[in-house]
Length: 160
Image (cartoon, rainbow, N blue to C red; front, side):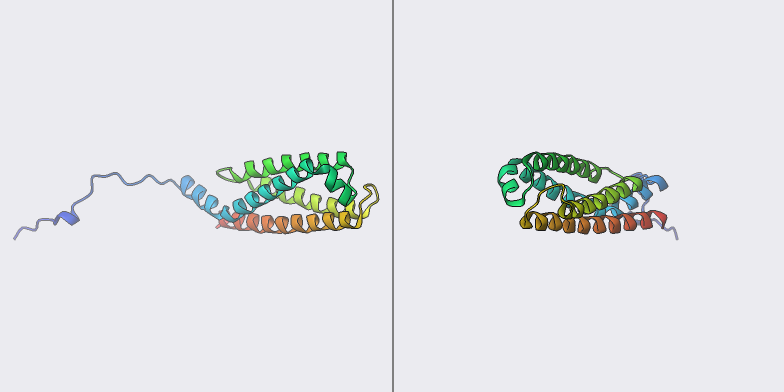
């Protein structure tokens, strides 16, 4: 008795998808960076909004907070540059861990800078201005902590 293979058991002539260890690991790292990428994008968007507000409403915001207009505009321009940098990093196919660590460090310094600005008398802030800067420090601190968590998740997956 001769056995003929059934059509479903016939070998496929379609080539198998190419998968190399490098491309597989890059895909795993990219997937593991998804949380970090999301946090970077949210930070970028919120930083851009704050930068626009500081620039567009420098005079009225200055009256309410005590920030000189030049300080508010300069701070807003700094925020816009930071937002662009964060968006650029979030768009990288593979986020370099050293670059993500730099984001964490710079955000940490910005949070400290907001607290120092709130309490040092080099900018004549009103009570509302102090609260404004402290809320900014809190938001930046939360973003920093989330970015650090995303960085740890990404690097842990790369080691696994």
